Amino acid sequence: MLVDQRYFETLHNGYGQYFDVSEVLFEQTTESWQLVIFDNPQFGRVMALDGIIQTTERDEFIYHEMLTHTPLLAHGNAKSVLIIGGGDGGMLREVVKHQNVEHITMVEIDNAVVEMCKTHLPNHSAGSYDDPRVNLVIDDGAAFVNNTKQRFDVIISDCTDPVGPGEVLFSSDFYAGCKSCLNEGGIFVAQNGVAFMQIDEVTTTKARLASYFNDTNFYCAAVPTYIGGVMTFAWACDNQELRKTPLELIEQRYQAAQLNTRYYTPAIHFASFALPRFVEQAIATTPVQQR
Ligand code: SAM
Image (cartoon, rainbow, N blue to C red; front, side, top):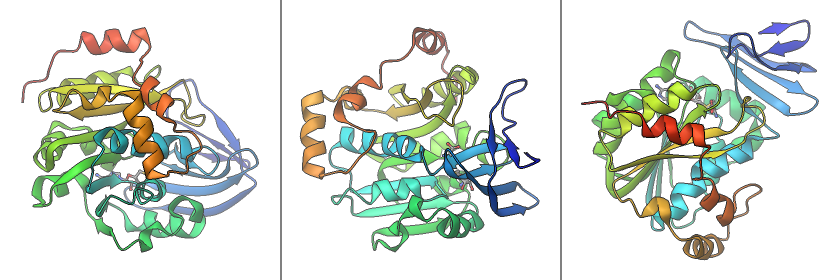
């Protein structure tokens, strides 16, 4: 919410962050959401959707590298990748770095977000939409996974928080669709909120995912502008070994892929699956939600 040259995030009741706004670059209110991009002295260009910080130029690399390279290097032979959401283009930029990936489909519900981010957040996509392997589909992600005939080795859900159009991307129906369009040994990952502030998002996702996949767990990283502690990323796969890929193998794959990263390292990949005790306990006591 913009007030006197300051943007106040309104995600949490009674707690939040603000950003000094040196310039509003874009503002659009549609029937489904209020979107704004502004310049901030600390974080560069910032995009917010309905009062929730989506991404900033300065710290987006942490989030996009961890949600891309962790599943892709754990899988080791991904040829087809699906990104759900991701309208700012940062996830796509990281996925196209993997030269062995042959097909990349990105399903984003609002083309206006894609176009606006190409203009005002050009370093996020950094030309990745022009990669010949990329197929951009403007659709609801849940509808897409439940209707597509395509199959994928890795699915990355890079959506907004579970409110409004993003809510369906935390539903059992969506997870069922993802399971049905994953190849054998495929991996599903998703942004799953900041556990200290949104532990319900973790337990709800665990309960729902566990009825479709043999191995459902979480990994984490601290992203400064996703306030309140480490962000958790949901992990789901039927091959329980992939989450425990040995550090030496991750290192070999990282070197072979010749990735240029600023946060992700094989050691951080391996360590990111170590969760705070309160998160482990919340997950351990979550019953599987029956289909
Ligand atoms: N990194 C951000 C975060 O962690 O909150 C999210 C990045 S991106 C801005 C989120 C994208 O999800 C937006 O572009 C939004 O349009 C898209 N989105 C929301 N609901 C969707 C749906 N049901 N299907 C496809 N895309 C959706």
